[in-house]
Every structure is written in C-alpha cells, then in structure tokens.
Length: 145
Image 1 (cartoon, rainbow, N blue to C red):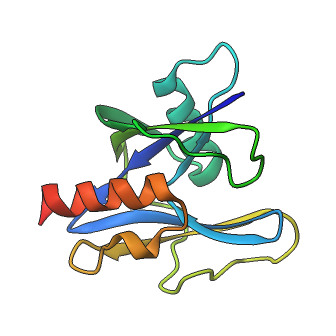
Image 2 (image 1 turned 135 degrees about the horizontal axis):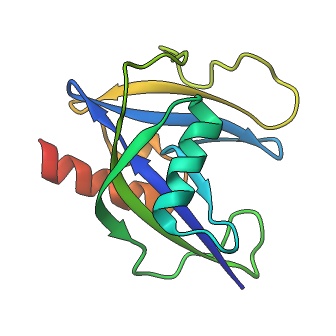
Image 3 (image 1 turned 90 degrees about the vertical axis):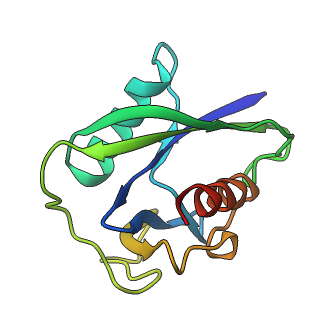
C-alpha cells in the first residue's frame, strides 16, 4: 500500500511555516499539508489541505521535491509513504493564528494542530519529526541560506 502526502513550503520574510500536530497521541512537527484523496490532483490536494487547516487560499507554485527513498508510514508499517512538496504562497495577508512556541495547542482533545514560523537561520532537520521532512529541511537550508 502507498500513502501519498502533499506538503507546502511557505517562506515569508525569512521564515518557514511549520505545523505542530498531535495525531493518535503522538506530537509531531511537519510542514503543512496532508493526504491525497482518490480522484484529486496533487496541487488540488495541497490547496484543499491549506484551506481546511488555515481557512485561507494558497497559490501552489513550483514543485520542490518528491520522496525518492523508501519510508514506511509511522502509523502503519505495511504502508509506504510518498511525499510531494511544493512551494506555496498565500493569496492574502495571514489571518490564522500562529504560535511562538512548539506544540502550543488551543485544545488537547483528539487530533489538534497549531502553526508557527521558524526563521531560516534557526531551521534545521532536527525540528521535524519524520525522515522525509528532515530531508526537505536540509534542502531548504541549502537553497535559501
């Protein structure tokens, strides 16, 4: 089985938008985005995920990276994750709430998330939970520093 995920790289004023989430009791840091649904294109998926999570529209720009190594799902070891990353930008000023601290959730019930900005100077692979995001963080650091 394959699990296709689509994520956005949003950089504004020298900061990268990251998502902190609690999924099935596990606290993770990742890039905003989520799972591709049947019948959906990858760009449409990413636009939908940003709208669901932030309430705002994004413009999906250039492709940045697609997983080119084997990664089993953290939640289902019989499933292989393939992640696709695009650069994105918001179509309007940011209106959703962002946090200054890691894992600063509004609520602790169920699957919850919050967003925060990480400066490109502070950005490193270690802030992310999953191996694909770590690889992408290294690529962002190489491209933008």
